Image (tube, rainbow over all chains, first blue to last red):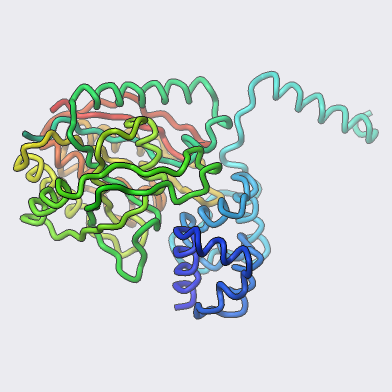
Length: 133
Length: 272
């Protein structure tokens, strides 16, 4: 029942600008009416995206909540991976992980100039740190 | 009149929200296919576009989850998502309550559906409309098939539902277009996002183009989950469009994986 309440909170806040404003002003007050455990309250207030994913929150609900918190896409994916590493596998539901936790499944595309610049930066950092000499 | 257009397309939020992170060559060919779909849709001169979506908790939740729902309002708001994140500004989208009501009554003759006089659009409808009705000048009749909160209705019910949509089109004087939206295989909104089973996708689209009912229904949610991920449940929307097309055969205009968009980006239409 508890995961249901977590998801109900997220469902409601995702679709209500008024609720988003109230949550922004006082996060604890906004989650208080929901039948949540202390662990769930902390995860919603922080917000702890990794913990929420571990608890089994449907990714579609979680993704919209992360977007509301201005968490960018790659950061969102990493927070979920970190949550699994820290807390263990997803406890319930169909939104789980099947890929290795150190794998970036869909990296941002780089054009040749960007890739070359990045390689140059990496080389410079290695050089400055005396690595590979 | 009748059904004047039937097609399917992807709706992943990355298509608009992470456009700058994709390989521009593949992305632009996909956008071009989407644009051609718009041209074809406009050429069919629809009075309304029925968008069969698989929404992501913008309206329906497990407290009262309809398997099949249709919108019945004069306008709809969207997107619910952060506009910067999705790359689409919030706006009102036109509907047509009176037409929706007549359409829904006809659908109810053969399928049990819910209706909603309030409906907010999420990326599942806003991304397709961004490409297909960029001026937001054609009334939308939103349709939802629950692909998110199990238990999900079995696939053959999506087929029957599609037949009901077609019967409703046939019964009304208006020119109706149907667009189904969803991913094929995908593992969205998780660390798996970007994992795509291309072979499974192409096989599914082959069944879709042949409009082979038995082949399209020869899946169950366990095998879909294993081969196509939790996002694969959205093939229900494509199956309903196939049934609505009533034996017409289809053409895939585009179906290639774009991992940062999380799906095999797809545009396909039936020759009615």
